[in-house]
Length: 290
Image 1: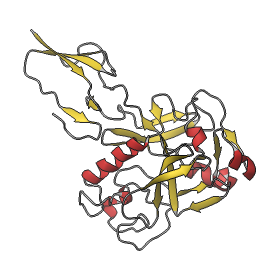
Image 2 (image 1 turned 90 degrees about the horizontal axis):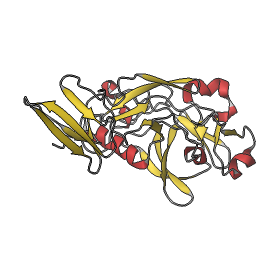
Image 3 (image 1 turned 120 degrees about the vertical axis):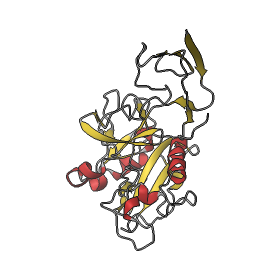
Image 4 (image 1 turned 90 degrees about the vertical axis):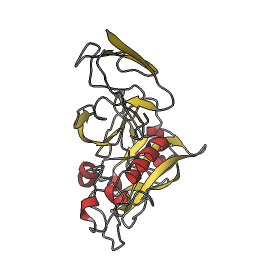
């Protein structure tokens, strides 16, 4: 006799049968290999995006030293810091305006997306609540040291700051390796290499700006969250989709478990043998729900 459980997703619940990255440690996309890192229930690119092409293979605009074209463009565009690909591309990737982020052709590979403002909040909440604050606390937003790469940042003497080599066990503890890749301003100029990193979200702030995240070498608290005009050039990280619940099991019996459909979006059926089993449900932040 078998037990049959039909699971219907409510809000943002997901079944965790495997790792967030599905066992992958890297992915190749448009000629670049990106290392991956699992943080809670999320799977992130460990590198800034560097693609010249959208997901559908079309080219992203490049305005080079044409500052007016960058400033006036309402189409997706990218840049290398200081227009110097030889010095900066392999380390920092590219800087994209938000029109590229929002382009229907897709900036990240299939199965991945530019993180929304909510996705960033999930990451930050997880780090704060799960021992990534540099002082070991679980409040106070002291997790940025754990997000930043140990290289390339300007030095700081501020306690717990990204650019300070204190608390060595917490430096890049998350493995996300955020970099001080600077920005291309809405006027086309370049600022802040080594001092700051900026990353887009896919979420609009208002009709002319979108949500961003910012990290500075002397920060010791949380990421700065704010709105920025669309034609500013920021770095991009890709995040693995979780709209369909992914598992490492196929649609037939493995270890006496049958799950169908798999993956699923709104509901699935789990078929078990009659002996006792434990089903644990986690929310999208990684906290046990039941």
